Amino acid sequence: MKKSLISITALLCILLLAACGNDDSGAGDNEGESKSIKFGATVGPYSDMVTKALAPLLEEKGYEVENQEFTDYVQPNNALSRGDIDANLFQHTIYLEAFAEENEMDLSSVIAVPTAPMGLYSNTFANTDEIAEGSTIAIANDPTNLSRTLLMLQDQGLITISEEVDPLKASIKDIVENPKNLEFVEVEAGQLPRLVDSEDAAAVPGNFALAADMDLLDALALEEMPDNYRNVVAVNTDDLDAQFAKDIKEVIESDEFEQIIDEEFQGFGKPGWMTEE
View 1 (cartoon, rainbow, N blue to C red):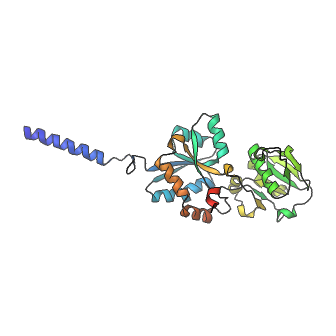
View 2 (spheres, rainbow, N blue to C red):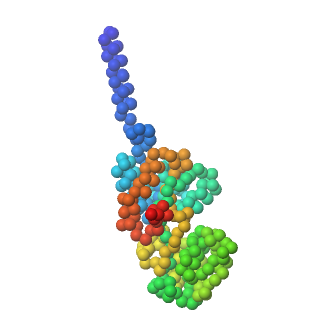
View 3 (cartoon, rainbow, N blue to C red):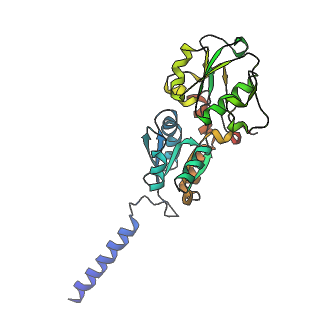
């Protein structure tokens, strides 16, 4: 009887030890953190960036990577805040901060990534010098894209914005010089790609250009994008120091990631940290 009790006790100990040693929870090697990452990204170039660049490099670090695609700019942050996904990639810093404040979410940027810039496209002119007196240019009517458009046109010497206004908040009324008397047609940003055919030129945000199968390198000019308009990988603030967030940052800062960007995402503007020598 005693031998039987000893045998049963020994067997239970072995089973408990085996259970502890074969935890399938996805824990990391040392810190007990998950070795899986679920991204959220909008359909298009940033979902492609997850699957073509981030996922392969993170898988080399031992992660299982899943990417959930979204078709709007609200649900990716809602899903992140709820914990349905671990990170998302679709928005720039200004949008992230405004959305998080408005919706009382605690979200933070991990790092900025190369981003499709706004471009000035035309089927009428071959370069910006050819843009003629009185030409019509289609531009976005939302404040964020409008200010970016005006900055791009100013960089090309086509207009001058008042120095008294924050250039990131500039509107049509803040144009103080328009030497070619350009006429501006304000429409929703999503309509801009098709206006390349009907207007003399159109300033098209990068995401809408790519969605319309336009080549970024066909633009007469591409914006010099401020870094706070570049898209970022975002996580819940509590996860900023988590190992998976550190590994995402490390992967994006790698030479291998930049090589994939150069090969697969031509025309994307690189953030300042990537171009600094």
